[in-house]
Amino acid sequence: MNPNLFVAGVPKAGTTSLFHYLALHPDVFPSSRKEPGYFHPFKIKDMDKNLEAYKKLFSGYSRQQYVIEATPGYFYGGQESAKAINNYSPESKVIIVLRNPVERLFSFYKYKKSLGHISGKLNFGEYVVECKKTLGPIERETYDFWAMIGGNYATLLSEWHEVFGERLLICFFDDMVNDEPKFIEGVCTWLDLDKKQIDDGRTKVQNKSMIYRSKGLQRMATTFDSMFSGVWHYLPWLKWPFSGLYNLLNSKPNNEKITDSVRADLVQYYQDDMNKTRDFLKERQIENLPDWLTNE
Image 1 (cartoon, rainbow, N blue to C red):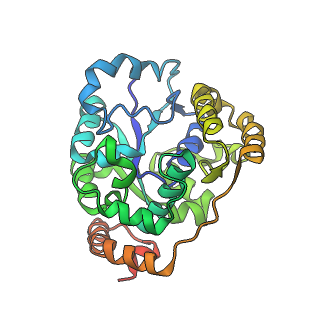
Image 2 (tube, rainbow, N blue to C red):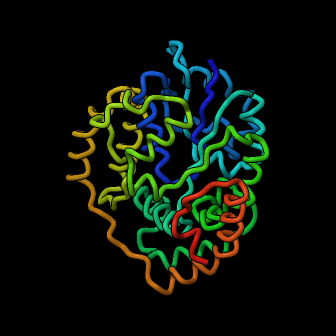
């Protein structure tokens, strides 16, 4: 069975939590790894070579209504990734979660900093300066600093909608944070699933950004987490004591804040695209937009 439900974006917008919530539903079968990346713009040219490995991620399927995978970077592949998914799985549905691009960039920065992918000496304002030097299309080599461009949603949303139409659900990270049960219920309603069949007691927010004392130990932990990703899908509660102990030993919260001047600079940078995104959503009668899309 090919996957027929894709959480395709955007990075740092709660997609990991959404994937795990939906994977708890008895009528949803999850990929054994959360982010296969098969249709990612970095990998899409190698689709034929990677097909068999991709199919193995869904072995064990037992007639569930949906087979889900979640790779938020698919969003940045635009029409190319959207068409590739649609050709591979013609009846598939796609969910895209949007987040305030300023907050999304800040979260991405903290996440990459926690992994040691960007210098620990770099503050957010300095990171934004470096991002402004990164121009052009998404590239693996410059991805850590391309993220600022990645907060421009309007054109990419249009490309995904052109391919999937009514099979595309656009929702908002704000709603997930403000009222998680209602958010999940809305997604389940769109999928024609009974939300009551998800055990809320087995859910937990995923991917909080931390500062890690030992980068080497963090790399080992990331490898361990990836090796057992299939186990975490079915027994998420089993991971929590490991995560709690590890964070106690090797991490501390990243309490850095966005300065007023940097926030104002980023709001100005994104304003035109936010206006276009708002207009796109209103044209498609998507209502109850978050504040960052209604404050002109």
